[in-house]
Length: 77
Image (cartoon, rainbow, N blue to C red):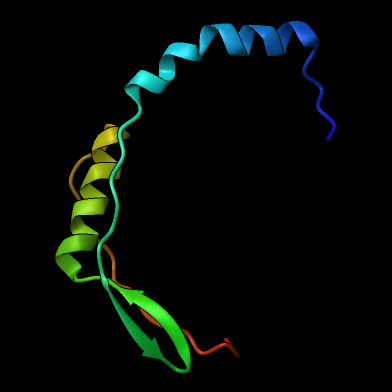
């Protein structure tokens, strides 16, 4: 692996961001297994997708938006 960070930069990252792990928030999506077009998928209800959208947007300080739509694309697309 190659980087343009100096050793001093790496030390600073380690020291200054150590406390950031106490501010991490987590969530997950819960769906049900389905087979679609020969592929096993985890399918979520729109309500579950909206909760994840709200979580991410809130964490970024963004206003409410309705979650987008999802679809299964043919592999030729």
